[in-house]
Amino acid sequence: MDEVQKFISENQHQFGYIMQEASRQWIAKDPIGALTVGQCVGTIKANGAYIQLLDKVERYEKALCQIVFAGTKEMKTEIARDAVPFFNKK
Image (cartoon, rainbow, N blue to C red; front, top):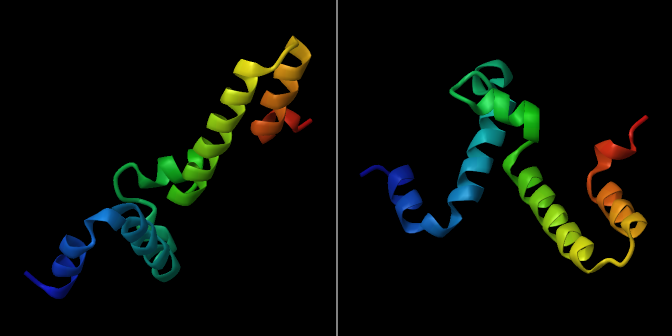
């Protein structure tokens, strides 16, 4: 087992962070090659990087909870519009 494999094995609780950092460094070094492997390019173009996805999920989850308890349809619509920025684009 080499040093990288050992580090990953000892830090399994950090898989997401390790993957994001490896991706970030690869993109910095080889922006074309890094985004052509597997589904990476499609996922990143559609959804953003891993950390951005976590932020979106957190925002949507919070909005969903607020919508469940919101009173009027207008209030629910406003919460949804605030949570999903592309709804506000003209």
